[in-house]
Length: 258
Ligand code: BGO
Image 1 (tube, helix red, strand yellow):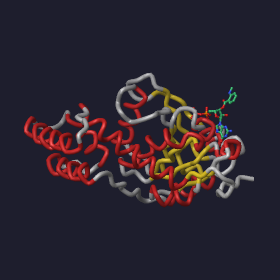
Image 2 (tube, rainbow, N blue to C red):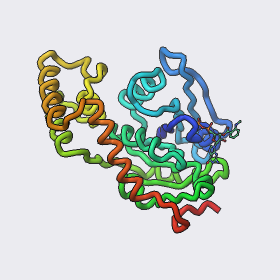
Image 3 (cartoon, rainbow, N blue to C red):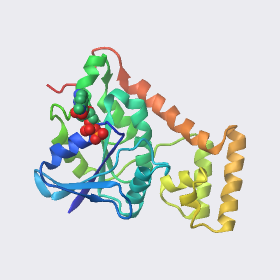
Image 4 (cartoon, rainbow, N blue to C red):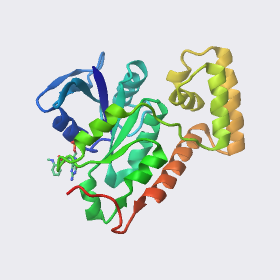
């Protein structure tokens, strides 16, 4: 059985898409040990595909129960593939979560939902450029018009990898050092260790923690910023670059859902 997980910001249309993909084939329970609702179901058109709905999130920093549930799921029981549902009218905010999800290394496709509203806003998103700059398949969808959803699943079933997006070379150097110190192969864990995230550091020895601290302190000095701001700024710089490349405000775009 293939497991596809749906992830996205609150109000991105995740529930609408989950309902359209699974119809009445849904099970509702709780995530283990917490009172966060867990919904899963079988794809209407192929019951060998299980669709797992995750809580709506803005990021994967473990500040809320929802974020912890999602992070635990992705690291302990990774699905075969992620469908990241993005509100196309809020691309900048949505891509922040997208970059974090990509760092997990789980194959992923992006559903550019609410595409029907782009025209109203006079905006176009070139999905081919977006796919090229992220290195993952992108599909325009509209849950309200029931468009593009089967194509997202089709692309998800073919997705086998996700590319690593490079940040500033000084940060990349620090992440490589952290990988050597910790043995972490997952980029998300390396970045979390850079940020001094408690969950990532919990299993490490005192010696490893002090080696990481040295690497991070040096990077903070040469980049003239603190550890969390370095990561946030690098992600937003990349997002800004992607948006400048893909979003236009004329009528030459490639959205066509009719
Ligand atoms: C209300 N296009 C448009 N235009 N709207 C969409 C699309 C789309 O592609 N997809 C979803 N919506 P959720 P989360 C609503 O409920 O699936 C709408 O949080 C309303 N409700 O219909 O719940 C969807 O699970 C009254 O809108 O998202 C829903 O991710 C007035 O986006 C909202 C207007 O979708 C959130 C909208 C009483």
